[in-house]
Amino acid sequence: MLFETHTHLNAEQFDEDREEVIKRTTDAGVSYILNIGYNRETIPSSIQLAETYPFFYTSVGWHPQDAISCTEEDLVWLRTLASHAKVVAIGEIGLDYYWDTSPKGIQHDIFRKQIRLAKEVNLPIIIHNRDADEDVIRILKEENAEEIGGVMHCFSGDIVLMEQCISLNFSIGIGGPVTFKNRPVLKEVAKVVPLDRLLLETDSPYLAPHPFRGKRNESSYVRLVAEEIARLREMPLEELAHITTQNAKKLFEIK
Image (cartoon, rainbow, N blue to C red; front, side):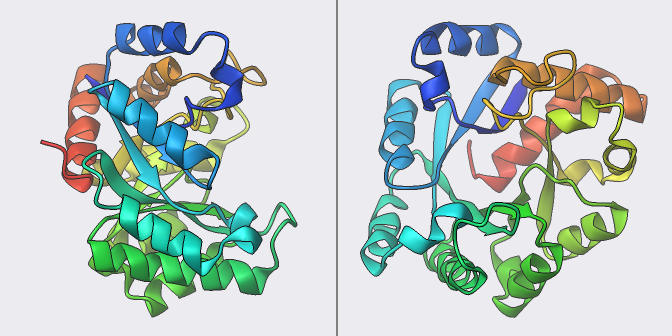
């Protein structure tokens, strides 16, 4: 029983075969799926998926790449959607210094406002962090984000950063890159992250694990992520699946 904690199955890459992809996912042993909504276009379709399939859940948030387009009206909209029965988190939110699509100051402002929103509605946050470790940690501390906690999505840092995140009440989401031969640091993180802070994800359709690297990712591949982490930790796959699923259900308050 696996919990796929970060996917984008509403993306256009799945328009031709979405139902088949979802069936392959459940056939692979995935019992829960958290689909991510991150702007005006993706949030409605993500909510629709969660309303259609009983094992789907969704988040609502504003991606840092799109921060420049986020208005006060959009933030009010997010607050309204947060009360939906299938909305279990605010995200993905954070900072992205790789893609130069929104000025850093605007990213910081929208990030802070969404952390405050999450605290108001008492939902955990899903953090997108690309090339912005220092500022992400600083803002989380300044906004007292540990009060709600959440997950560091697609974690790519080292053990020191992992420990900082855990000290701030965040879990560590690990996806397909842990299967890459050229990611020894992430493999080390996967070996030592406290089991009660570990979550599994794919970020599909992006970042497909080996042997599908470079191709379209899909949520059934979360099993490959679980298999690699279980191998690294020298533990049974079934045990890892059970623990990480319970972690996700606890974090997102899914009974």
